[in-house]
Amino acid sequence: MQSIMTMGEILVEIMAGRKGQSFRAPGPLAGPYASGAPAIFIDQVARLGHPAAIIGCVGDDDFGWLNIDRLRRDGVDTSAIAVCQNAVTGSAFVTYRDSGERDFIFNITNSASAQLQPEQVNQAVLKDCAHFHVMGSSLFSFRIIDAMKKAIEIVKAQGGTVSFDPNVRKEMLRIPEMREALAYILEFTDIFLPSGHEVTQLARSADEAGAIAEIFARGVREIVVKRGADGCSYFSADERIDLDALPVDVADPTGAGDCFGATFIACRRLGKTALQSLRYANAAGALAVSSKGPMEGTSGFAGLDALLAQQPQHLRHAVMEG
Ligand code: ATP
Ligand code: MG
Image (tube, rainbow, N blue to C red; front, top):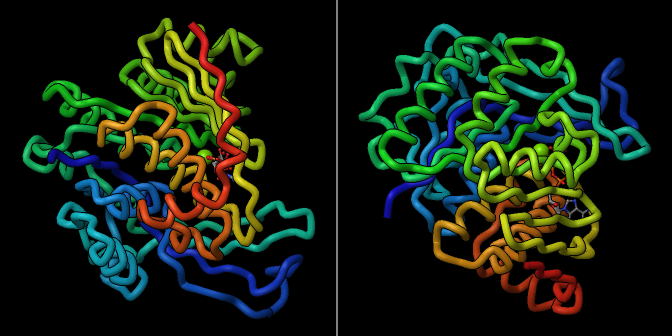
């Protein structure tokens, strides 16, 4: 089977040991944990038994090897991860406020992740790629945007499909070239995976229904909206499905969207229906928030099936139209 591929930041996350902990004073820390939105995404794809590969850069240091070892162990092809000698692996320190909101200290734009070169992207690297996933969070430099555009063009030219999770930060939308890049990627997107508030960010319409109609008019074929603890929705030209979130205890929300998206894409590629894929994605998001550590909540079909079997009553909320 041909693989699902993605490209972008690979980093470690180090978490404050307790809620409300300030980084302006010493305190307990947990980690390093393997992390980076595209890395979490591709780990989840591999956990489902689908061929998976990632293009990226890490430093030749323990944080980099922790990620490579972990991804390999879970079945990801890491041959397109460059180990660079002139920069260290990216990191993110995260602390949780009492409200549950997260504060991050990132070292990504000066890390090995920023060393990703358009030259790393070529037909040979992408030859087995049937589906390419773009994380908006990865688009933090013009060089990376160029690399991403190159990858998309190669995959599309060989008949592959593209998915896009905008993961937009507001600062990005204020930079005209960034807005343009996001709009460019959307033009090539087959499956769009925004969070609830992102649906209208790349459209003219201020309401969700209007924005969805606009995005379909631009050629996107499926839209899956992630709504955190409020569940998720699926839209195609003739179908809408809404699912409630599965009731779980939240240990750590980081990575839920990445696991959700990966599961939806892998399931669609494995031939499952939109409803089956959405159910599995919803379960993958729920399992992701139940585990501490951004990549620690990735799961195989056995874990997803076990959770779904416990919660059949929450899966009846499917609305079909058309
Ligand atoms: P991020 O803010 O990190 O970008 P996201 O918006 O991409 O996250 P979320 O909507 O937070 O992603 O989560 C993705 C999916 O995971 C949700 O649509 C839902 O299916 C599941 N999920 C998220 N939070 C919870 C929760 N508290 N309980 C159960 N399921 C959840
Ligand atoms: Mg997200």
